[in-house]
Length: 323
Image 1: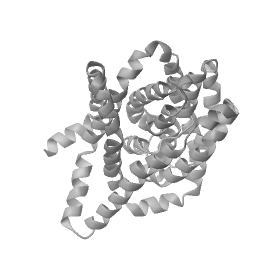
Image 2: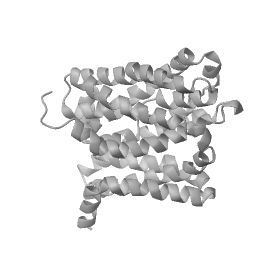
Image 3: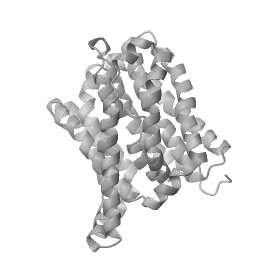
Image 4: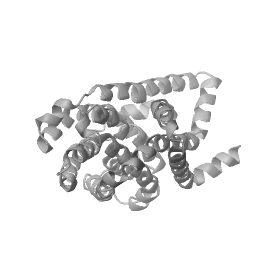
């Protein structure tokens, strides 16, 4: 069993691509599976984040929360640099209100869940991103209406419900974090707690594969049905990732952060909160019916990009560089 786990960790990128492909095939061949799989996204993601949080010592989270320079760079990248990039890219779909709404909703909101997993896989400071998650969530809740007002107008702002932000934060961040804390506490006092930690660490690759497959399988059929309308958004999402990679790297380097922190900045700047804003898009009026599919399209594109980033970011920001 140990040799299988080691093999999986060594070939994890290929396995993630296989999981995305398998999810795509399942979603296209069995459209009726989309709804139950969509319901499964939140619990599957919560289990993945629980396993991730178990691998982050809670004292490290406390230290990261007091890291003012990292937090300042993280906030500047996500709430200053990203909006400028998004405004420029969104001009390519400014003539279509539904496309524009979907692009803005998903690209203006930084990810607070599986970005932590990908950051860890890419050798980044995942404990720092975990500590910053509440601040990023609060920041996007407060600033998203303001950005939408600036970029679109007051009509779209009035239709946005922020309740899904709160629900997602509770189910995907707070509860898994509390459970991980309880297990870490038990691990310091009992054998069963240490056993749970070991099992969770060994299950990271399968859990990530399951998450990727479930997300893609639940959404790919809806995207394929409107592919002709959605195709224009794909270059925007690819362009966003391509721009945020060097911009995040430069921001981290100029701020003289260490290598793991700079990698974390890159992953945070490029990864968006699609699974949380999807309910926001679904709550828009019927005239914006395409917006949720735009968000889903970004999810599929981003998952593929993140698998590439796991290999690319460590090569771009290498251990041993002068900070």
